[in-house]
Length: 115
Image (cartoon, rainbow, N blue to C red; front, top):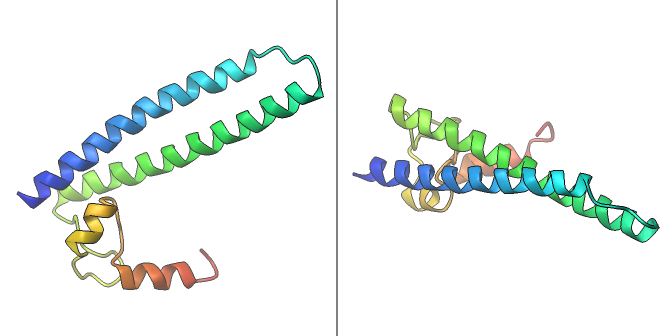
């Protein structure tokens, strides 16, 4: 029952991200077709373009994490910390259903200088 809940949550988020990516791609294309009349227009278009690309990249990354979590559900490995092997708390998964690490391990990983 719990796995079904998280799978549904992940699939709903995946659907929303795919819609967002389509909208973002359209907006990026529209920005490429904007008529630029002066430096102010150029600066505005550049700023908008950077923002759209950043959002697009973040959404792509989240989509990859969701796909990975869905595969873990299929493999029976969902909800297990990839570092310590302990179960990830349900509350954490409700907040971030594609979490790979428990809270303790996530903090350790974030403190590592190579990450």
